[in-house]
Length: 119
Image (tube, rainbow, N blue to C red; front, side, top):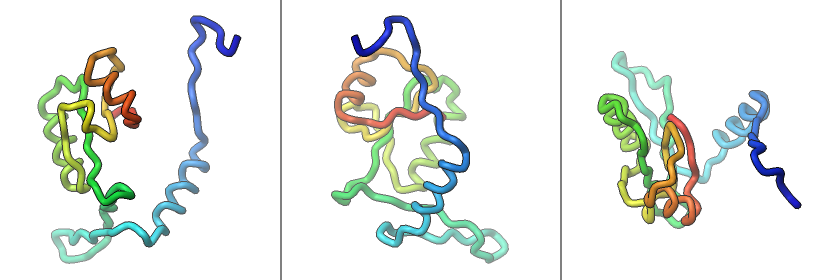
């Protein structure tokens, strides 16, 4: 038997591991980047704009985000980063959810290989 019933498994990564991956990803010159100017004219922040390897944009399914202000803010951030928001699980590449529920959209997106993240 491969797993024990009723036992939850979790995946953890150390902060140094995540930072090293972030550094490697930031030095990748293959993806386009857009430099954002601040109000004072300095260009101190970079917004990383990515597309999928086949050139399509990432599509995000927002689930269980009851606060309309938070949903609007997440939608704005996703669009600024070059993504799209969808309500169709078939079309999504990522799912942003606070709590995992077995809905048709969630299961469809999961079976399609979508990444599941929390806000």
